[in-house]
Length: 125
Image (cartoon, rainbow, N blue to C red; front, top):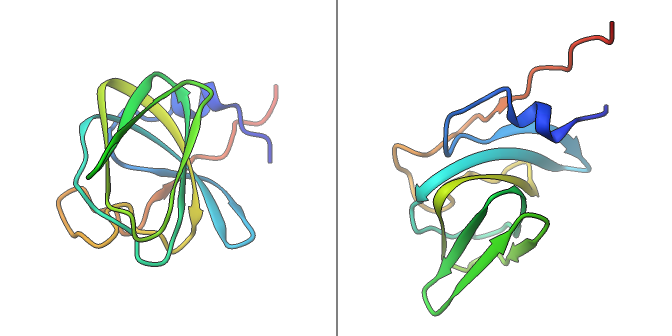
């Protein structure tokens, strides 16, 4: 299945609510838009890859912060507490096991237990 990222990100506007774009060997490719600060959390069993498509954000760790711009990615190892923060809206691809809960060890109003799937692309005319 071919996915045009610009078109896919244009299908939703809400922040902190990942959309499943594809499944791959027990992993999922998720698209998410966010702005502001997320909850501090960690994942006991899953690493996460954050790839910036558009914009920039800071991944905060308890001992440092890493700024990511479009075209850059960061892997957050399992067990490492982190918090993404974006001053302006950012578009990010997440690569992570299908079982990964967006808020990890924390349950909050931002927890998305069942992420929605992107709508299938319209047939070519």
